[in-house]
Image: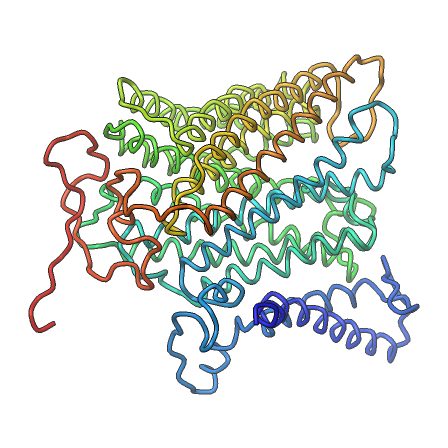
Length: 628
């Protein structure tokens, strides 16, 4: 029974549909090319002993994604609607199947989709981390040990884009699961679009990983032209996967924005919302407005490779710097898509574990919007070494410094919230404190790269690697783990093993400090990033060994978390309704949450973070009217 459910799941059907669709798409274009007498062009794919042209592979990959969504059942209701059939939303497990089978198939419930996002995020995180450990072992000693340059380049490039995909999935997990619960909604505004936003990301990840099997790519996760225009077929699949993943971001952002604006509970005015919702709104604004820009850049690169249009290739009059402007206009703000929900988790959890009101609620809310806005004005600090005019460098340097203002507001609020609080140190709080310490490292090391003279010296050095990892770990990974531990009882109805949670934290946090400081220190000594080897005369071999060991410790700590969650869901005691004594609405209802969230609606009658204030209430349930 279980095996049959797995084999007939939407994941398996989608993978088969993607394979069949890809082959049909390739065959269709190859037939046309054959009829026109066109020889294979560009990078080719050897398929059953036949050279397949790159344009055919591109078309086949796109049809494969459509095939995946059709086979998984994502389009079923929409297709029925187009021919006039009734398509009521289906709730609960399919007839005759257990409840857990919902998580293997297309489902419209935001909690199911949020958990699907979360589990996929962790799995993708483990894959990306494995790639990092493989090339870190290579870097532990100077000289080439067991990887070729091409293999090294593919691994570090795949590590970058796969980890970014993992973080985007994690953002989707938190926003999808929490926003409707926190605002008192029964679901997202557009449940089917919500399912689409998750399922379109699955075949895009398959495309990215498939690119490793057909030559890989050595462009890094940035895909800079003209390098990306000349690489093997794997580069094209990477660009396609990246491009298709943008549909997921845009669809998810639309849902978050519409849901937050139109579906809040009675009395929940803007400044009575949980602070995480503000962070989710700010992140969604960036996703909705900026993703189109990188989509255009990627589509132009795909077209330039596949059908010969010229945008970025200098030999045909194109401008490779144009790609960087389009790419970074999205890719710097997207850093805040990663970070803002993480910072929202910190602000959400601190009052709970300090038993004090959140200091400066409105300032934190506005600071999230401020970070989102200023993030659009700083993209060119990534390009100080790209030949930019001096007249443009200084304004971008100044705007970069302005990001520190709303970020500083958050740090001030966190410290003020903790000041003289009655803190307890359960695992979620430990990860919140770890997040603050690690994000502080990222914040302090960032302005050095945003200032022209120091950036010209440190650009593309391992200092950048250390800074970026501190920003991502402190801004998202640590808060994400805090959120997983904090809302684990809500999702499963059971408590996790606290001892394993603490072990995870005390392995991961010092491990990360060693890794990040080590990366920045070798950068100061001249180690370039994206390089497979280094001069032993630099004297950095010992530090590289420590970085590699630290990466292994971090990896083991995450595996401990995964083990903890799997075992606890089966063996731990049932969680009480509100184990953290939270005022947030989702903790006032049973765990796991009922299908439609709130069987009895509630009204907001106070402020969300008045912890420690006598007779203060945030919500009250609305009694049913006789005859309703």
